[in-house]
View 1 (cartoon, rainbow, N blue to C red):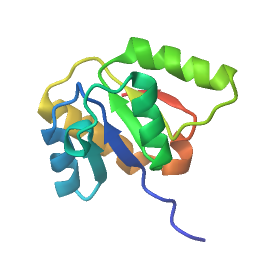
View 2 (view 1 turned 90 degrees about the vertical axis):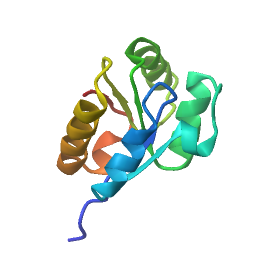
View 3 (view 1 turned 45 degrees about the vertical axis):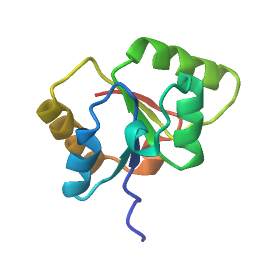
View 4 (view 1 turned 180 degrees about the horizontal axis):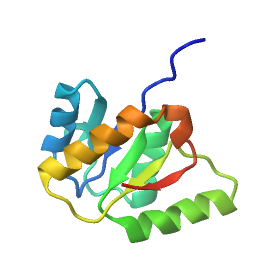
Length: 116
């Protein structure tokens, strides 16, 4: 049986850009809005970008992304996962995301909203 695919992350504009590089140092596939220069896109555009690239999005903007998740589900649209959190320090963010990534496959995040 093949090994489940590890989730890939796309970090929203409000997440410190060092989180992506810190996760990569731990062996995870993570990119940020900052690296892709996708500043100023709407939340929906960010989620679309992430999903088009098979990535779950991580954000410190739970309110807007919870609403966006509900909108997607009610309209039968799919996404690669939404992970939300209240604001955390760089270290806390990397630690919590590393734990979450180690415990879940990309398939387990599809169309799911997860509170970190």
